[in-house]
Structures are given as C-alpha cells and as structure tokens.
Amino acid sequence: MVVSTAGTVAFDGEKLIRALDDERSARSLPWRGLAVELWEQSADLNARLGDDALCPGALHRTAVRGTMSCQYALPLLRWLGRPPEDFLVGDVADVGETALVEAGPDKRLHWDLAELYADLDRRRQSRGLTWAALGAELGCTPSRLTNLRTARQADMGLAMQVTQWLGEPAARYIHATDW
Image 1 (cartoon, rainbow, N blue to C red):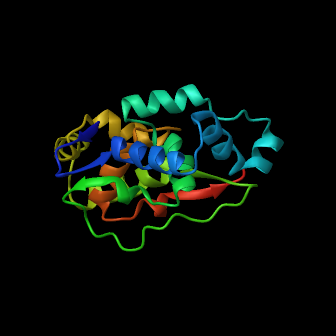
Image 2: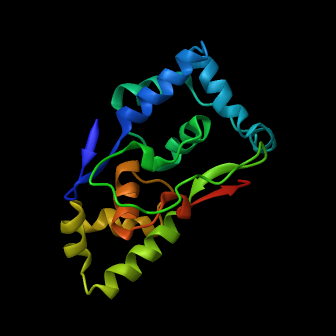
C-alpha cells in the first residue's frame, strides 16, 4: 500500500516488500530462512541482548499489509543493501547521498526520531509555521509530528515524508547502535 500525504512523495511499502520477496526467492529462502538471516545481521548484539529472531509470520503479515514502522523497515533495508529513498514514489527530492551506514554483527540500525523531530521543529520555526500548519502541509495531524519527539517508533511513510520535507537523506537520522 502506498501511503501518500499532502505532498507528492510517498513511501511504497509494497515496493519494499516486493524487492525483499524477489531477493528472498532468488536466494531460495523460505520466510523462516529470511527471518534467520535478518536476525544474523546483528547476531552478536542479539545474542548479547537475548533478542529473538524476527517472526516469519510477522514478516509475512508485513508483506500482506505493505506498511511498517520505520524501525522494522531497517533490517529489511539493511539485508537488501538499499536506502529507504529507493522505495519512494512521486516527486522525490534530491537529498544527496542516501547510502545507509554500515553495521557489523555487533550493531543494528536505528532511527533517531528525537533528532528527526529536533530538525523538523527548527525548520518549522524558521518558516514561521505552527504545528497545525505543518501538519496540513504534510497531510497529517500535528500530534503525529510532535509525537516524534519521544517516539520509539513511527510509521515509515511519515518518517520519509518528514525527511523529504527537510530535504535530508534518511541516513542522516539512521545510526548503527549497540542496543
């Protein structure tokens, strides 16, 4: 499902899932095998933290829905070796270098939503916009935007809409972490 907001750019979760499924099929991996490979990307960190592998059923449900949180999308993008901008449709802003940071087995990728919020708030203020006006511009409620300040997860479509509005690559807000 392509979720579009007021702008002319949207994150196409179905396109990401098709790319994931195409690569999974090319490697002759069942969904369970893909879940294992996704877990193994951060195997050392997962073992240290006692984290479980991704559920193959959750991967399949994500494929059916075509939408996901920005945090959930990261291991998928990492496995594909592609940035989120590859899955945008519409009038995509040229934001420069979009490659994701490299992460070894002792790290995982993580969106820094507080940093995204801080940049969004600074830009909003510099343009003299209220949260309501910015929400209208982005096609969402003001609370979806202000919630980024303390959110652990956000919808991938919203995160990408914000990065595009800022004219920044998503990779600026995605870091390799050891937690």
